[in-house]
Length: 116
Length: 114
Image 1 (cartoon, rainbow over the protein chains, first blue to last red):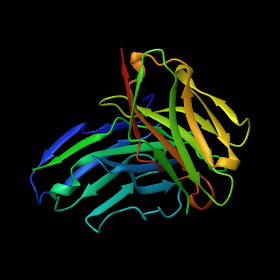
Image 2 (image 1 turned 45 degrees about the horizontal axis):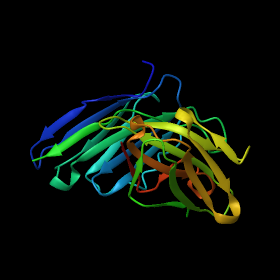
Image 3 (image 1 turned 90 degrees about the vertical axis):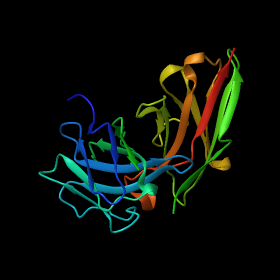
Image 4 (image 1 turned 90 degrees about the horizontal axis):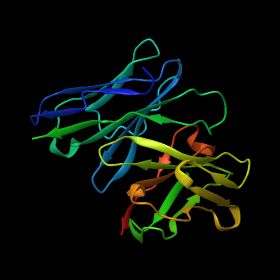
């Protein structure tokens, strides 16, 4: 598609259940990011994939969070044993990393997760 | 480590008035700086970015920002606010130790009143 696509757009889950959020980046983009946006917390970096390099996982808040990127394209963010504090909008973004760090990063519309 | 600080979590202006949203950055080397806008229930959209070319950067929807190294600032302005500008605005920094990763400020909610 033309932009970053995320699914589901909305997800309500029970506390303790696992959830998977999917991101389909812009075709040809080599770098992919996950961010979390919570009320009053701003935008929090979670994880960054760049090509075949080891991902930067420094923002994952706990070992309940993990992400993978298959074939250098689609990514899945998994949250195990969800807690109420995991309720947030999870934003995926991608860019065509060429060199340096001034590349425009394009965001999807997010997956709204509510843990009840 | 690099960071940005947005002064004022909420800003209210009258339609037609000047919009000024403040952003200060912290970086040991020249950074790349961005302003993103988020309309209700939507994702983030890039307004403009500074990548060490011109210090005055023009973006979409009539917004512009000026990079001032001496003040470590990258404030966003628009001469005349429209009702459609009501949204949340985020300043972000990348580069140096953060590589291609964006570090965001906490955002400023802009309200435009008649």
